[in-house]
Amino acid sequence: MDKPERAIELFKLHQKIVSFVDNNIVKFPDNPGLKDACCILLFSKSTKTFRAIQCLCNPVDMGYGEDAIILVRSLLENLMSLAYIVKPQNEEEQNRRAELFKNWLILDLYNFKKELKECSSMKTRLNQEIEQIDPAGDRYCEADRLFNEEIKKLKQNGYKTNKYSWSGLSLKWMAEEVGLLELYYKIVYWHYSQLVHPHPGCIDSYITQLPDSNINICDMPDSSWIEDALFSSFDCYRQIARLINDTFSFNLGGKLDEIENEFKSLVEKLIC
Image 1 (cartoon, rainbow, N blue to C red):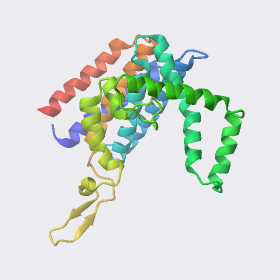
Image 2: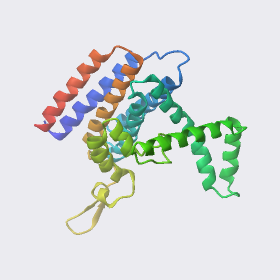
Image 3: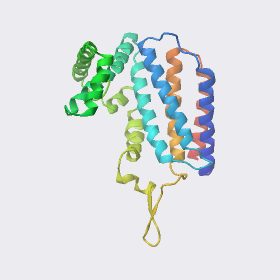
Image 4: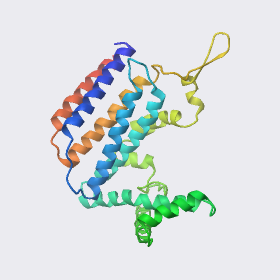
């Protein structure tokens, strides 16, 4: 199977799982609790990102694989956050982690506000936003208290904390906690970060040297990174769909198994 054929087969699997989700995951609980609401948010965000990757990676018309890879990294971060919330078997712990996720809205606003100069027009806008959602400052005080308690507990358990992350953990530690460290964080996340940030390691994707020593600017749609983006995004999204199925008891495991088995079969062909 050559490269264009592999990309086409992966694209078909993309379309298949999106169609499956659209037709089967259509009804969430009315008035969901906090944990469920966080899961629905992360799932909806992930599905929209997954659709966007498809738009960037049409294997017939070429595409923007490098930019799709940037979205794959975002999808992986969604997977880590969702898995971190729902991983505990204890429902009380799930709700506590969901509370930390929710609280990050107000904590992040206050943290950003502290970094701005007093005369900044952005600070005025932030004050107005904070006034709307937390006029008395009660939400911030409670969120800050819970976050500091979490940081203290994590340190006592030997974790390296991160005060700029909603969970109090860096992505690396979150990945380890949910079993995504070795492959997804250390390899996929690190490798794709070269395309997300200004990095000399991605030069071959945008500039090539011609035989006469001149350079060729590569800024038009092409086939580079398309297969990688389709492969890794499907792998992330099928895990997200599985977590949502298990969390809300949609009883779609059998059908997800069929799609995942198709993916495994295709992977075997790609390796060969």
